[in-house]
Length: 115
Image (cartoon, rainbow, N blue to C red; front, side, top):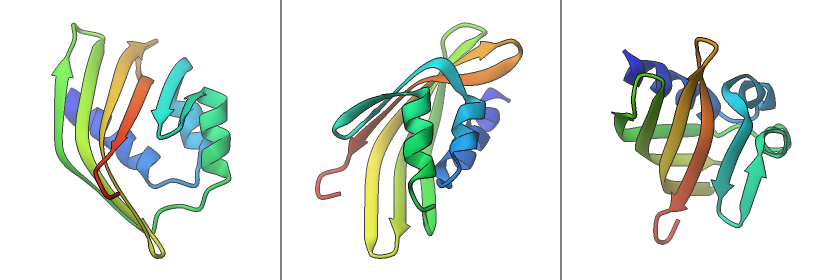
């Protein structure tokens, strides 16, 4: 099922600390929109390489919307913690199936108020 495949990718990416996971799953022309920055694939992977993994994270309320046979959008609520640092956001990830594999083409984060 597409939902499970995409959720598995998001879980792998969500653990953090592994820029190579981003290089594997992001399309070459991917755009990642995070608070204060718009990143391409390599800038995103480098930022992840420079960051410690999350101590814990949770994906909740995940929903997938198919946009034809080879495109889908996954939306969800994210909660994570690294030491005393907590982060909560609503997220959306757009995927395209390219050469038989799902590739992340656009990811966007909206921090929840007070996050």
